[in-house]
Image 1 (tube, rainbow, N blue to C red):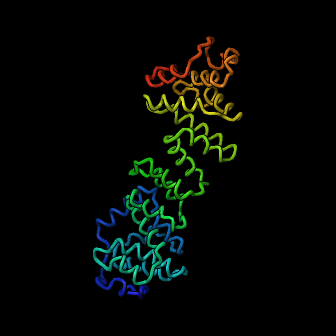
Image 2: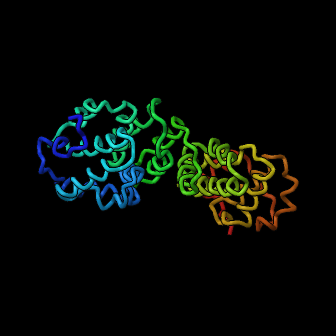
Length: 312
């Protein structure tokens, strides 16, 4: 069993084994749903395997042998090769040597086994159980941005708490623009206040972009009590001087001017920050010659009922 470089030893129970059509179909579907790249594909690339999508899933016994050969012939350390073989054996263990037996036989380090268990589950869409492995303290985060993005965008992942749980447990450095945007959308839906403070960690240009994204998410939410509560929460938060200017510009002259309640939000924000005298001077910007001041309760009530006047 320890001679993992020999295909006929590794698959001794069925040397002619090939993946079944149902298994192949499920893997291909999982890849499509994962933006055309599984985590196993990324792992194969790290071993120097070119065009992993052409090799995995293997369509025949010979294809499986070719995949095994490319893994073995890579210049990577043995425990990296063994980890990939462990993943493959998890696919095939109903017909071949069990993955756990293999892991024990080759003394696969626990942290590698835990990581592979996690990404194997993630590749199959079992997100909650996958995180049980991928958030283990023993692990050094591998592909953290890719995992976070998958948790935020996968069409079969409907639990908004999972990407937040992964982020706060693993603390990945989020640098990719697409990952930043996807995660921020989840964070903004969870907590307006946390989203505001998180966007301040970014450069000025990204800070403004995320801040405006936060405004859009809050004001474009479904009508009802939740939108009312979140709208009032955002307007009540302490903004920096720059954020104050961005807020007004976005809702009066920018892309957010047609959002539901944009005009009234600017008015209430002005009152809340003690600048009510400035309303009259900016009335033209709001498209309103009157000075209809609103209090917090009327704002929340109007949002909940969906009756606030949208800026035109």
